[in-house]
Amino acid sequence: MKLNQRGLLIVISGPSGVGKGTVRKALFDMKNHNLVYSVSMTTRSPRENEVDGRDYYFVTRDEFEKNIQEDKFLEWAEFVGQYYGTPKDKVEEFLEQGKEVVLEIEVEGALQVREKMKDAVFIFIVPPSKKALYDRLKSRGTEAPEIIEQRFKKAENEFNLAYKYDYIVVNDDVNNAADRIMAIIRAEHARVERTFHNYMKMLEE
Image (tube, rainbow, N blue to C red):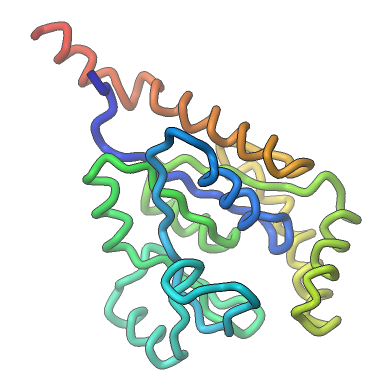
């Protein structure tokens, strides 16, 4: 019997450039999981190899602002001139189906979700060093130097918000980081506050 019938919301977050997307992809490449990815919406342009509807929903500024007005986001934020947000209808639908829903979002968005989804699991991804973070931001080759500096300064401030999360995972090696996250997910499913009610019901039957 599965003790935790409702799905689990897993928020993978951290400063820009820590490798959230790479870790998330490695997590989904693992076998025998029940994970679904909640695709975010953004107004930024697709990067090379990014596909609309798979990596992000790429929309215009007007479309995004219409969704804000209609309260269709679980969270949203504006970052270096672009909007990012999580459509809430899909998240709730997946949770009701018992899925493990993974959000990969920026720090500001994660803190908004923390206010609304108290039973979600919040994982803060960090680089092995500040130098490693700066090198990653530069190696993308997709942004101007001033944008890289903005992202790096913002990241330095966001490291101080790690205490608001449930777990910290160092992305020193992508597969190791994914293994740690999977271990966290399995452990969270067995937490007493998630399972006690169903466990007592099972004993009565």
